[in-house]
Image (cartoon, rainbow over the protein chains, first blue to last red):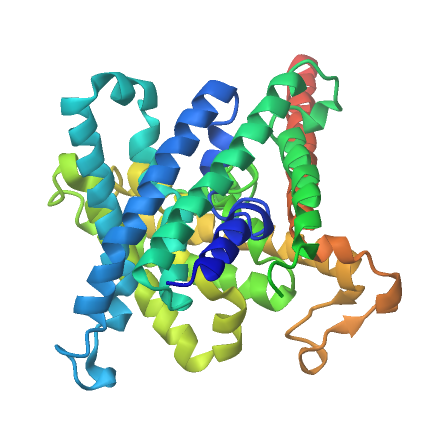
Length: 204
Length: 214
């Protein structure tokens, strides 16, 4: 196992290719649930968990069923075209399953996450991370690391943004920019800051 | 069925991006050239219309408890069809849009229309709604592309006109490269939404004044 590659993937997912600020994945929950830091952190943690788990579950499904060389000796016959449908179904049922599991075993966490849990199904960062794992030919461990660190990058972004947004409520801005547009401008400036990380060249 | 009213809602008063604030990931990510914007907009238009028609036709069969999962399967099917079509016939567009084609599955616009409109309305109304909302989405994408391309590269119609290079309006050295980066996406969308809010507020005030005068 190549530790150096794992660190490259992790730092890349958190800072350089941050899911929000440089890949534009998961903007909807990022904008929707960032009005207070507390809910933002809850959402970030839930997304991190689901992204890691989805990466772990989708990897064997893809490798041993959809593009398996044992089942489909001819590469032309394989079920690669079913990837999108299968992955989104896996993610949807995974989220549903986590919801039921938390409700039974950890009611306090379940109430804390509330409505955000089902919303994760339509978070494009989750489907995005699974599709990218396949595109980049990541191994099982690399996929899980990419999923978890991608989620941590999301957590970092949404926490920073929510902290700024709390202050933003007291600012005076042009009337047309009130509410959503000024939040987008703020996110744009944060993206500019994160753009600075793109100069970071880890291990050549 | 009022086609004109639905068209006005889709394009302006209920525009999916600028008013309902849905589907922003793709709006910001792929609007770097007119070709990408039009391609993405039309893909979503086709998928939205087809999935609207099917979900509306199946609305009496789909049990309400598992409706979201059913919607997603229908949407994912059409997304796969469009994805394969683009890979076969428009390879360049498929490469440019990359992961954002399969991600149309989780584009909130389609799911939101399915949930709020198609599940309650007849097939023809749902089809018209799909076309109108799709046109509204395409319109915003094209506007964003024009702004970002003009400021970011100094060109017009990249990917389509002038053999794919686009018409250079001012030399590329003077362009603000940042507009083609993620920052530009956020700032342009903020300005487009702000402009929309400005005009909507103004027209509201206008009608109020007319009412008072009348």
